[in-house]
Length: 73
Image 1 (cartoon, rainbow, N blue to C red):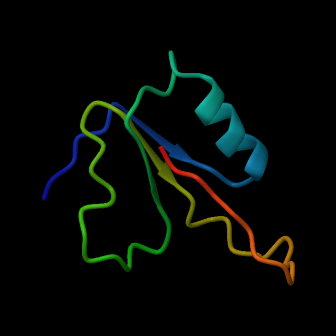
Image 2: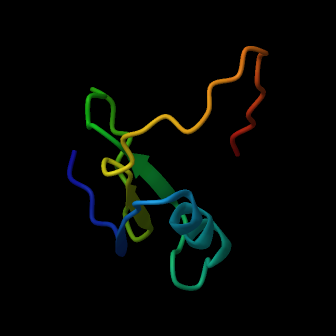
């Protein structure tokens, strides 16, 4: 499946990811994230939106023993 994002971002730091999410005028929805591109689903389809390539972010910042909760929208 081909994707035609309006914007492609190559994030190298957490601060860059935060800046993308906060600036909808410059980085329109939908925002899709790709990393190593191992998924067989159409995760990177962001027609007219923002494709955030996070493959340069290759280190673990923190590992915590307790469960964490995340909520997607």
